[in-house]
Amino acid sequence: MISVEDARERILAVFSRLEFERKPLLDALGQVLAEDVVAPFDIPPLDNTAMDGYAVRAVDTTGATEAAPRQLRVIADLAAGYVLETPVGPGEAVRIMTGAPMPPGADAVVPFEETDELLRDVNQAAQKRESVRVFKGAAPGANIRFRAEDVKAQQRVIGAGRVVRASEVGVLASVGLTEIAVYRRPVVAILSTGDEITEPGQPLKPGRIYDANAHSIAAMVTKFGGIPKLLGIAKDTVEDLTAKIHEGLDADMLVTSAGVSRGDFDVVKDVLAREGAIDFWTVRMRPGKPLAFGVFNGPGGRKVPHLGLPGNPVSSMVSFELFGRPAIFTMLGRNDWERPFIRAILREEVVNPDPRRFYARCVVTTDAEGRYHADLTGPQGSGILTSMSAANGLAVIPEDQPSAKAGDEVDVMMLDWEHVP
Ligand code: AMP
Ligand code: MG
Image 1 (cartoon, rainbow, N blue to C red):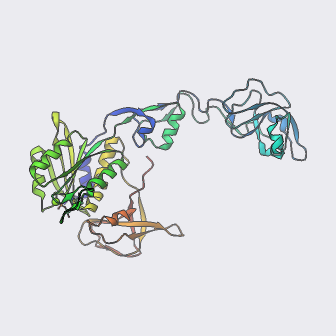
Image 2: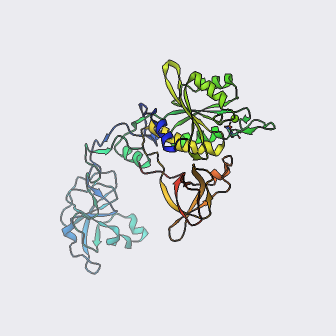
Image 3: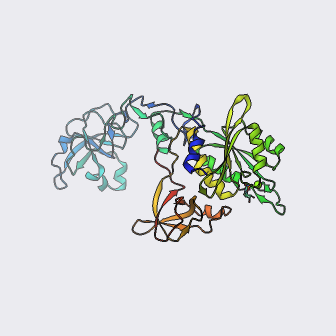
């Protein structure tokens, strides 16, 4: 038996980052930037107001109070998107809207709330103002967003290697970009195997079951940033398996499920041995002990890594989480594939019957004091997929620990959490 870490290390050794592609900003969500992005101009490009209010010379407002307001002459109205060339002179003010560039001469903005603006009734508000009364002194620079305070021209706004999330899309759009260079998404071919497996939508004959694995794995591939290519279901024959596998050899990775446990090991093994090199491992984990990993010889000598997952639906998902996700992340140029772990208090005993690392499906909740608690999501059989569906984490009971008691603190790997890349 080998450890999860050993298996992962051997798998990751054959993967590397894929080439980059140039694509529209929004299509690159979750991909990794292949180049530094430099701001072509200052952000913001001009001093502008952070508030709706009046642009003034700060000295003209010194000492103003509600009892002793300063009255200023309003020389213009300025909306965002327009530039005023006329300077603001002594005793003057410009009515100004958030984001509008500061007019020359003004060095502060008095917000509407500190003037008589809000005392005017609806009818007056529609009329152009001749003057304004200021109730509070403004310091020089008050309520101004200064040119280049966010980013200076030619400064790097986002470095190569960063994952494109919503905030990166926003930053890149704000420097005017419509396309970016990112490492390509891996195409992952997915094949279910087994005479009993039936495509959902088809009638179910006695003794048969629907294909859960291809679909849960395809969903994980998409969620992790890859592109699934569904190859369907192969019968447990050398001919069918060989033919279906060949359809997947244009992919960046091939994932099969089932046929790696003792019972029907042989068909898959025969095919794999003929078409490439393959190892069958027993990994010290539960669920999901059997695992196959190898490399197919694709067309033109192309090497296509192959991950052979166990057939039981929970084993196949947990194995793909532990081994498939790091492979996809590596091809995407990401190294943050490790999920965040938290410490949670077990609410019931978990028995670990043999010396393997037990990944127990659980749901983590928070109590009033902010402590995490973990409840198992029911029976832990590796065929019970609904217990995976109810879980948000996997409680980890180490290899050498026969049980964890109610009240014990354990590590929980949070399935839907991500590290900040
Ligand atoms: P095997 O690895 O072929 O021995 O399969 C182990 C168990 O997983 C058997 O009960 C299979 O019926 C089941 N199984 C295999 N493939 C799938 C699949 N694609 N969807 C759901 N269950 C499966
Ligand atoms: Mg089978």
